[in-house]
Amino acid sequence: MSRIILITICSCLIFSSLLAAPLKNTLIALGTQQALIPQTAYNNKLLSNLNERIIDYPNDSEANLLKVLFKMERGSFDEALVDINKLIKSSPNFHLAYLIRGDILLAHAQAINGLGSNSYLDSLSKAQQLKIKQFQDETKFRLRSYTKKLAANRIPKQLLQLSASTKNAIVIDKSNHRLYLYKRQSNNLPPKLVGDFYISTGKKQGDKFKKGDLRTPEGVYFITSWIPDNKLPEKYGIGAFPVNYPNELDVKLGKTGYGIWLHGMQRSFYSRPPLDSEGCVVLSNVDLKKIQHLLVPGKTPVVITEKIDWMTVKKWFKLQQSVLASINKWRDDWQSMNVEKYLSHYSNDFFTASHNASSWKSRKRSLAKLKTYQKISLTDVSLFLYPSMANKKSDIVVVRLKQDYKSNNFSSEMEKRLYLRKEANHWQILYEGK
Image 1 (cartoon, rainbow, N blue to C red):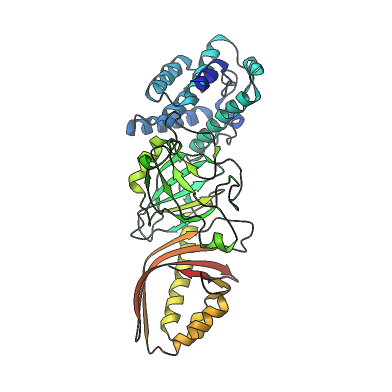
Image 2: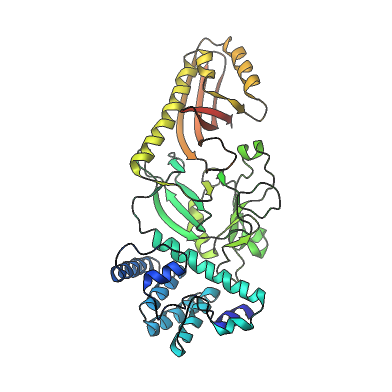
């Protein structure tokens, strides 16, 4: 309770410019973009959308908190105080709400002169001031993600295609501390956004490279299992979804570490500061419970990126089709019995768990001599664009598919994963494995 008392008494004024500044200036002070339409209409639109969220889910604590903030912007402090008290009653562990209540109470008593400009702060220790700064950052990211998402028709470039068996996908935007949940529509339509949630990530910024570096990795991963809370320490909350870090490319790049999970948090807190984990992605227990039933071990992808690349439907479809065309050409050349045409699809940097490009091609040439026919069917294809990274030469797409192979002397059905890298305007296979 000491943290609640601290933030209630000190009233460090996250929205300390409320009485003097219009909406757009306060948003800029919190690190968001300037309003793109007139203030009143913008404010009304924000409140209207929040009210719709709350109608759909009355216990949406984030929506209720944001509604309070915009009422404060309007100068409706009495209404804001009623609403924040309701929020605290329904979510008593949402410590940020206590800080906002302190701001509202102080605004009734004295003029407010700037973000964090509060004489109470002078008496706090550095550790306490750091906690206040963390609350300010959390508010900034919650508000910024909400105001930015009003832009329509944004598609994450990372999700190029979800297969029929991949009903949902997660994209993590580390720079905005946000988790986006998408559902499949069809092969010819982009996935549809169904929800987004505030998250905490690693204490250190940047891509994970070694064990213990306190960074959240960036890449294309897949949920491997579900661990319930009765098998975990309290800090993981209601449970955890481990992902397959390090993946095949991580291992090739020499990355180390393990135990990267999507998990909840200890029940005495509603949320954690933006940069507060040892490398995992942390959701509130409330939010994790909302999406838990949609996440399937062995199926659900989790794409973690520093910043999401958004694109139009037209560009998304064009990129998707270019990758699919390359995969189909690879299959056709494989079936053609022309082994050199087939092997031309493999990068000189190709690798598997037991082969490099040279040994792989040698093996395939030997096997081809024993074949009289080959028939390959590729189904249930998912495509994920790999996040940008400094040591990656060009775009990489992770492909997950089902392969049905038949020949005169061998038949098999398997789930396969490919990594395609764009080289000289062609998609070349960098990795192939189960």
